[in-house]
Length: 292
Length: 82
Image 1 (cartoon, each protein chain N blue to C red):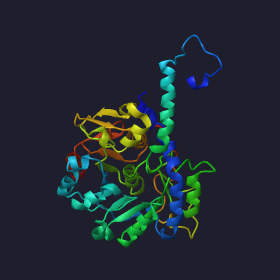
Image 2: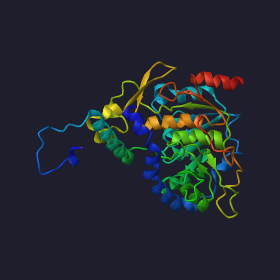
Image 3: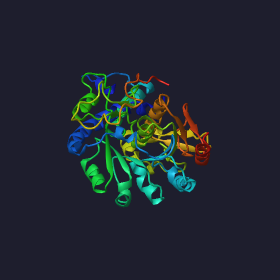
């Protein structure tokens, strides 16, 4: 097995080791601000019908002008954004109904009161404070840290502490936004834009997110950690690193158990496989419009 | 392997590691180091529900977790491999 894929297989445990302690500490600090559960979003009128678009912040979002096209379509369904995509959404004139967040951008001052924030209890307290200052309504959830069936489970302990639901976040905020969209909001047709989990063709390795770490860890072998995949929709060859490849593998595992149809309208990246239909954004929006 | 082969004598032959053994050792080392530097911003738990709301409805007075009701993920069997 390639080195990059082998590293990716270790990242479920590595993520727990790295973030669980800080997440639990932040959950304690955020506790005074917790007034609503994310489950309270379910009965609210957030867009029409059973279709939704999840917006993540990958390079395709700009390369494909996905948000300009979404705005032009006058899509009436639900829009859920990962925090990293919120700024791009607002600049493009797309105001999401819900943002899944750990961080915020300044544009939220203008649009904050109209956006509901699904905030993880692991978020830095400064972020949740800033959300409240911007007038956003905060709906809280616990990240699922481990197997809640175990008596010594961290997830179980956290749920016992604050009573909030534990959400299986899938490793990153983009996937967490997709989980919220179908498992909490109950949307049955979920389109995705900007979820590349990879780097565009031609991107220098040195410009990738974990390049310094990979060079430090692997030295001259760092290029072996990158994995190349051909997009079935565009024919482009994108490449990824162990962290993003893990996100992809997790998503592919999760999509098999999801009670929704998932349409990847990213038009790039490496998120394809069983359970995911890849198509152009206009095709998905057209199908929704026609009720197909 | 070389670090374990120490003695107060000299061998007539040079001990060479096989390429496979060295590669395996290096990869294990790389993975261990990778664990501390890579990983996601949110955890993932394999083969578990999307949403877990506990075995019973939350007690009164806790955060309003119960007000939205059960979700499709809650109380359903754990997911299996697709």
